[in-house]
Amino acid sequence: MGRKHERVAGEWALPVAAAVNGIGTGMYVPFTLVFFHYVTGLSFAVVGAVLTITGLAGLGALPAAGAAIDRYGAKRVLYALYGVRVAGFALYPFAQSLAAFAAVALVTAAADRAFPAVNQSLIGEVARGEGRDRLQAATRALQNGGNGAGALLATLVIALAGPAGYTYAAWGNALSFALAALLVRPLKPVRSTEPAPARGAGAGYRLVLTDRPFLVVTGANFLNALSYSALSVLFPLFIVQSLNGPAVLTGSAFTVNTVLCAVAGVYVGSRVRRAGARRTRAAGLGGALFAAAFAANIVLGTLRPQDDTVLGAALVGVVVLYTLGELIHSPAAEVLAVSAAPEAVRGRYMAAYQMSWSLAKAVAPSLFTTLLALDGRAPWAVLIVTSALAAALLIRVERRLPAEAVRPLPLTVARGAGQTQPAQPAEPAHATA
Image 1 (cartoon, rainbow, N blue to C red):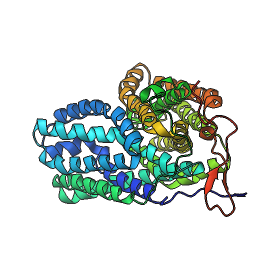
Image 2 (image 1 turned 45 degrees about the horizontal axis):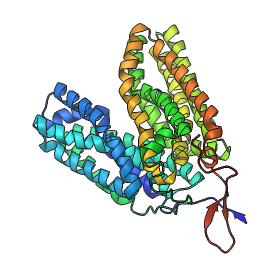
Image 3 (image 1 turned 90 degrees about the vertical axis):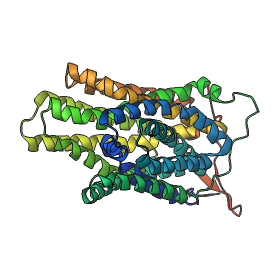
Image 4 (image 1 turned 180 degrees about the vertical axis):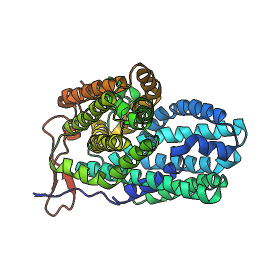
């Protein structure tokens, strides 16, 4: 037997598509309310209310998307979601009545909420073993790079074309989604290594709800997802209100995070894989680095440096530490969830897992603002506790997860067979007890 690293057919396709998709997303997310105000002509208050309501309603698409993945395959569902997003952003400039805007926003929000679960399922379909970790790290890195490039591109277009630039950005966004859909064509699902389950046995979401180890992984992700929301929701308020720092520092924090994710994501992911870390332990380490960054913010909230240069340098250090935690946590946690899901119902599992992200995003604004009103250090103290609890849950549950989910099995190639296969695990492929 010879050892060989598994390569994914068309491996470049998904990360490049993620970069193009990121350009589209980056063209409107940094200034969402302003973007839709100019595109539709509706007031800021109306736009905000519609986006909130349709965003929450869009969560209802997740269960349906999970079922569709299991029936039709992730790639076909991904094409459908790209199609909806292309149509949505192409139609936004024409949706100038409240009813029209709400209708377009609703179907687009549903596609946006379902997209991450479908994308994660696709990684599970086209890659095995360490190939999933590598593909996840590369996809996330290029997605972040695309987000930054998209925000810069939209800024330039708006600066040159004025308010009409928002319409051009909407159509450019639709074009980027169409191109991203074309780029994933080379990806081919690999043959399943699991036997087909008996019909009617543990079908649908009942299997997810009875899989307690996976529910623990999902619960831990909800706690860590609060840490991810902190960068966009809590950091700006903390800098301006608690530290009395200039607003420009919030933009600098986002820039440092985006650049590091794009530049160092693949390198950090490869170092973690080479170290042979279990995915549960790597995710726990990422959470510990989050907690360290949050503890540093408590120190800053106590000392409150008056010099903007000192404050800026300290915040850069905090963001670097936070970003390192993100680069270690994200690939490990996402691939852990993908690999812990039975292949036959992976779509439903990923839909349930994605709900933890969506719920954290919904809860974070009110939670953080309430705690911040009590004391500028209070939300960071709560996040330290949630990060520690998430790490403890992951380490405690790892014994009950599939062996290949916790640590990718070595891949072997039989001489003359020309086919790569994983070594057989020493324990059952999936345990739900």
